[in-house]
Amino acid sequence: MDLSSTIVYAGGSFRRYDEAKVGLLTHGLQYGTGCFEGIRGYWSAQERELHLVLLREHYQRLAISAKILLMKLPHTLDELIDITAEICARNAFETDVYLRPCIFKSAEDIGVRLHNVPDYFAIIPVPFHRYLDTTKGLNVCISSWRRADDTMAPPRAKITGLYVNSALAKTEAITNGFDEAILLSHDGHVAEGSAENVFIVRDGTLYTPDPSQNVLEGCTRRAIMTIAESMGVKTVERSIDRGELYAADEIFFTGTAAGIAYVASLDHRTVGNGTLGPIAKKLAETYQRAVHNQEPQFASWLTATYASRQKARV
Ligand code: PMP
Image (cartoon, rainbow, N blue to C red; front, side, top):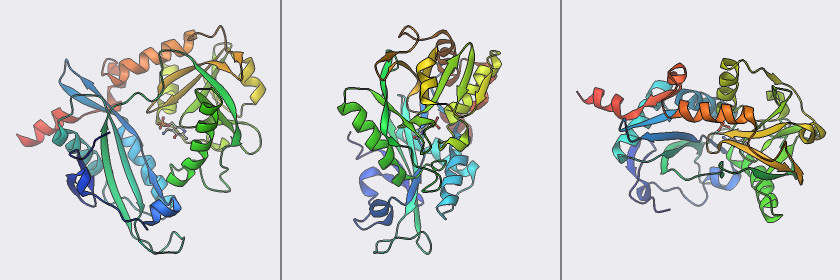
């Protein structure tokens, strides 16, 4: 991916990607002491507008992640929203995008710690790429890696270093011929995918691990629960056993990058009849409409980047 001329926001100003550099000894790189977000923007050719999804919610989560690592975002939520819209406008994207805000410990010295280290904030936009193929079902395995436990490092925070856990699980799954992994928590309950939350359907009810099961509190997870509620589908947040996954009528993942991706098989056992189940289908369709500004009841999830810029310039 050649991002060299992409406009990013880094260290307090807008600049080209290739002009924003970090040093080799940077703490965030050496010790994984940073946190980040992944935000999606969907381009509407008809409206000539780029809609950013759940921007406020993502920045609220980033603020919490940063707080856990003893950092503070250098801007208010409103400023962050404004800067993010400005990045999109300066790049004049006319495609779907993925935005990567991050804040990390920027000292270049030896000595792992969180205290007395300056930090650095950046937002990097990249043109969209599809993360998981959501048009067909995924063949998934239970990972031999366990999800990091909150007593080790809090998975509730989107911490860069914690993604070693996800990377180990994802690569194990792929090299063993699967598409994705589900990680169990330390005590053997279902946690989440390598970069997605997990839902199951049993007898018309949705179940998903509650936030105390070492999961990231996903923005898409919350959105899906809201859509489900609007359809009269109940969601129960509770611990889920591995065996219950095998018994489920439907299993699907949710995530900003992935959207909604359904699981066709788990550990070589077909889920339902191996096709997109009726509840996941309805939720996925509504979610897709919502992020493309076709669901007025969920319009507040979107930030219309270009319209707000034009207004600001008048
Ligand atoms: N769990 C993990 C570990 C993730 O990396 C992600 C992606 N951010 C998710 C869940 C889904 O979260 P969201 O819906 O906010 O993207």
